[in-house]
Image (tube, rainbow, N blue to C red; front, side, top):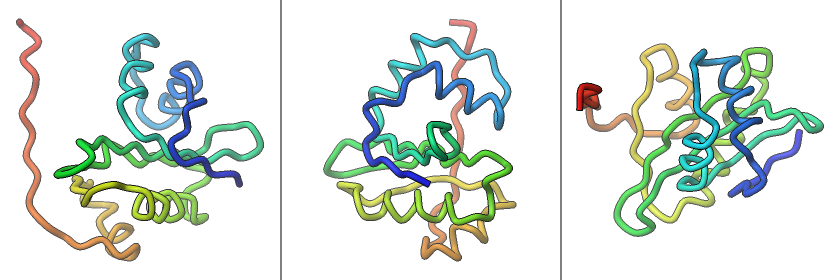
Amino acid sequence: MHYKVDDKTLNSADFILFVNQIWQGDYDRERAQCALSKTCNITAYDNDVLVGCLRILSDGYFFGTITELLVLPEYQKRGVGSKLLQLAKENTPTMLFFGSQPEVEEFYEKNGCQKSLQSYVIEKNSNG
């Protein structure tokens, strides 16, 4: 397994192929590339295959958030997500705040994350 911190080589085509194995969607390559350019991307590769990715969005001083931590299902429970989280802790310029699905809270707690504030969502109005 090979890990890269702030992976500038990550491109939207590879990322979309990866993400569609976890979260099916109709993703736009240009918009995905723009999004990837705004985050610190910590990646895990098995040979040349992207198998895990953690993205950090930060203002560099006050606030940072993990936008997602994704690992291909066949690589879960093998330490990949834990290693990505460890690399995030070691390389973030700020505290990190993030939400979690209830079924993975135990993973974060096992990896030394402290439960904090409840998260909320404001949906974007697609009507304009």
